[in-house]
Image (tube, rainbow, N blue to C red):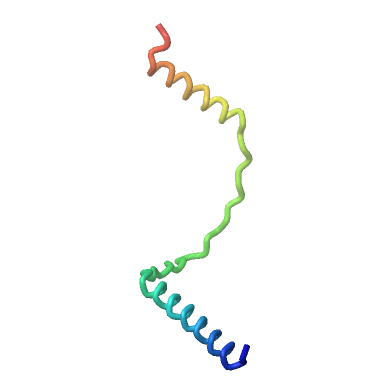
Length: 72
């Protein structure tokens, strides 16, 4: 293929891609990101209390059974 034809084809493809990109960017509203007011401090995670979780789950199950009137 001729160098002029290759250059013209590449230029045409680049132009189509550019116009599609511009059309896409113009149709999407730009929402500015809020700037952080103060630096966010990362707190150390507390260890998981398995006994506490288990107890809470048991209480929630008992409450659910009472609401369903399973006890007489």
